[in-house]
Length: 441
Image (cartoon, rainbow, N blue to C red; front, side):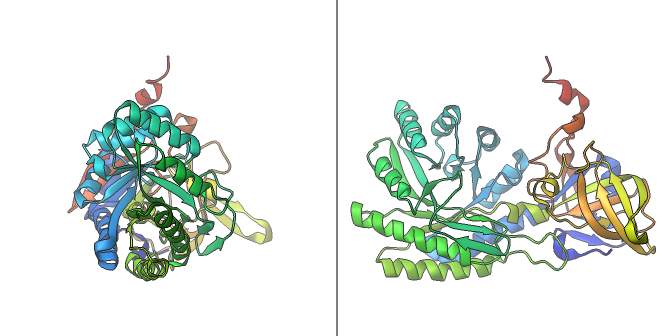
C-alpha cells in the first residue's frame, strides 16, 4: 500500500499522513467527521479549464462550448465554480436546473437534457430562457413547441441523435442499429423525421445536433466515427434546407484513472485528433465546420475528490486453502458510493492518517449497511495493523458518489468540504436525523 499521486487530486500529498489542499486527513476528520467528501477546489477548476483550453486550441473559431455534465456532481458552490470558469452546464432534471438558477448561472450557458422531461421541467426551462433544450423524442418536440408557443418564446433546441456507437472503457462497438432509450436513431431515419418536424414549428429553432456515445472513453476513435456520421446528417440538412446547423455537440464520456497504473484521458490529444476528423469530413461533405461542443463531467469532477472513512471494526476470515482475508468495515458504504455495487467499479484506497511499517495483507473494505453487497473495494492489499479509529482514503470519488447517494438504513448522507490553500470549508452540510424525519407526516 502506497500513495499514488497520479490518482489523487493535484493538491494531494503524503508525508506523515495524507494532506489534501494543504489540510491533513486527521484534521479534516476531526473537524468535519466521516464519511467525508473532500474536493480539491483548485484542481476542479483547473480540470474544467483544461477542456476549455483544449477545445479553443484545436477548433479555434469553430470551438463551441464546454458544458459541465452536472449529473457527475452538483451543488450550488460547484455551479458557482463552473460559472467562474466561463464554461456552460448541462442539466438533466428540474432539480439540477434549480441548482443552476439558484446561483444565477447565466441561462444562455445552460443546456437541458433528459429522455423523459416532464411538462413542468420543460416549462421551467423555457420560462428561464435556457440556451438550449436537447430534444429526445417525437412527443417531446410537440411538448416543447407547445409550451414555448404558450409563453410566446422561440426555444432553441438540439436534436439528440443515436449514431450507432457504443463506447465504454477501452472498447467501442459501431453498429447499424441502436437499442437504447436515448435520442433519435440515425440508421432508422427517425433522426431525419425529427428534424423535419422541428423545421415546421415556428416556436422552435433547431441550432444543432447532439450525440453521446458512452462513458470511460480513452481515445478519439469512437468520437470520430460518431462525428463522421453526424456530419453526414449535417450535410443532408444543408442540401434540403439551403442552410447549415451551427453546432455539433459530441457529448462526454472522457475516461479517468481509478487505479494505480491507469491513465486518464488527455483532453488535448483527444481533441486534436477529433479536430482533424471533423475538419476533413466537413471538407469532404462540402459544408462549413460547425461549432464543436463537448460535455465532460466525470473527467472534471471525479479525480478532484477523495472520500475519507473511519475504520469501525476489523476481522480475519479463514479462506479455503489456508489463506486469510482481512475485512475492514468503515462508517460509510454504498449510500456514498453506489458504483461498486451497480457496476462492479474498482477503486483504490490507502491508510490516510499515519505511516505503517506493517506488512500488507489481502483485505476487503466493506460498509456498514445490512447488505452483503455493501463492498467498497473487494480486494486490496493494506497494512495488517489497520485498526478501529484509523482513516481510510478512497480517491477519485467526485463523480456519482454524492449524487447517487441514498438514505438506506436511514443513514445520513456525508458532508462535502472544499479545500484550498490550507483551509477547508463546508459546501454541503452533513445530513442530520432531523433531516431524515422532516418529510414524514
